Image 1 (cartoon, rainbow, N blue to C red):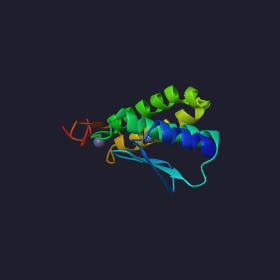
Image 2: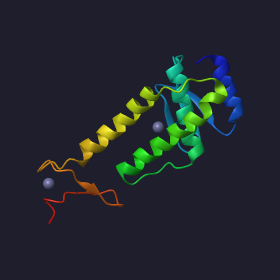
Image 3: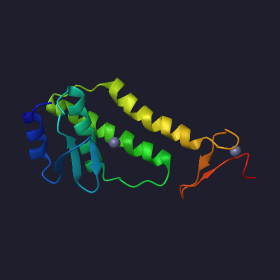
Length: 133
Ligand SMILES: [Zn+2]
Ligand SMILES: [Zn+2]
């Protein structure tokens, strides 16, 4: 990922604000934070992922499943954009990024009392099928 790439992305998405920060993150509605030392091919793909968040216009979530969906959508956008910028799509990178959300989902789903997988209702509250009868 070089300066030319970032300049091209900036020019192509004038509605998105790119700022320098600690790590890649998207701040709704239109700010993408880019780490100062971002330079690898993986970073280029991560940048397109954050752009994907901005373009998908789906930012809020009530449940962890919805949150995972939002991530999947943003990666799908990154896949679409990558060839336009000659960026290689690294499936392993995408899967490992998604895995962190999947792990988080599993962790949060575990019932602290009995260890069973709980379900989350649309209001975001987790319920245990065993403990909450
Ligand atoms: Zn994301
Ligand atoms: Zn339980």
